[in-house]
Every structure is written in structure tokens, then in C-alpha cells.
Image (cartoon, rainbow, N blue to C red; front, top):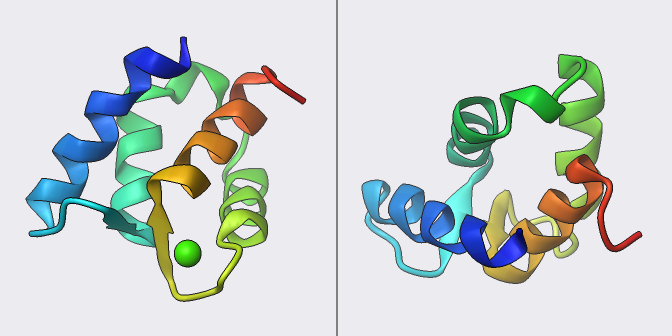
Length: 77
Ligand SMILES: [Ca+2]
């Protein structure tokens, strides 16, 4: 569920010294480690990440992260 993914965001963000933002690289690590079964190909993952970095600051907020998880897991569309 979405709630179960929340600790991942915090855990990976903290590795980068932040509590509320994750770099694109950190997000890709998180998705590849925790959501591998949903990732069919690298190309679509890159597109999803770019399209959902709404404010284009190169980092992913928690809200953006939730949207990405919903998109790749096919829930809440
Ligand atoms: Ca962003």
C-alpha cells in the first residue's frame, strides 16, 4: 500500500541528509531496490520520474514520490 512506502522515502532521503526531499538518483535507487517488480524498463522509469518532478528542481518531494509510486504500481490513476 501507499502507507507502507512512506518509510522508504524517509530512509532514502536521510541517507542524503534531508528529511523532505530525495534526489533523482536516490529515487531511482529506492525504486530499483523496493519496486523492482513494477519496473518493466529503464526508459519508462526515466520518463515517469521526469514527468513527475513537477517543479523541475531535480529533487522529489514526498508528494511527488507518492504520485510516482501510484503511477508505477498502477494504483490511484
Ligand atoms: Ca521536485
